[in-house]
Image 1 (tube, rainbow, N blue to C red):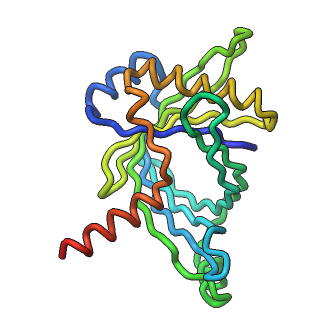
Image 2 (image 1 turned 60 degrees about the vertical axis):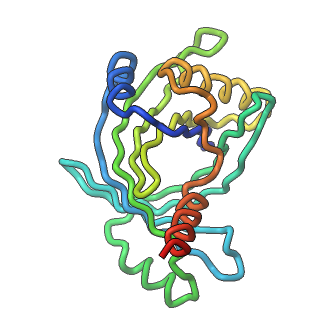
Length: 199
């Protein structure tokens, strides 16, 4: 399954929440603590262990993504990620195996997330489920992630889904200039380097 996604900086969280509540259905609020493991010789290939907590549940997800940034003619880059994921009941055996096998902790990321479900319409009037996630990622601030899960691989069909993401962004009144094409990992590294240089 492919995860087709854009994210954008949010300047007015309260106003955005009001707009999301008007057009979409709030599902849940969760915290996600992600740890990324990589091998020194394959630094771009990473395995993520996510510990997710809500008011009613806790779960641990192991995820591997083949990540790609694509611009299919929209003028904006969107993420098109092939995502493979499974649930585990205990992360410790896998964490121990990875560290014993030469993997290192590449990055840790904390997110506070509220999820909304929205149903968009494609050009033929078909329902397209869209997930909207309002995320706070310290120390980077607030972001809106807009995501469609699809099995499509053809560039023309992906381009239509990318256009749909932009329509949803317009609907919630976030300027397209606020789209962020960098991965969180890049921004966190830059923030850490900036913090170290100012000390």
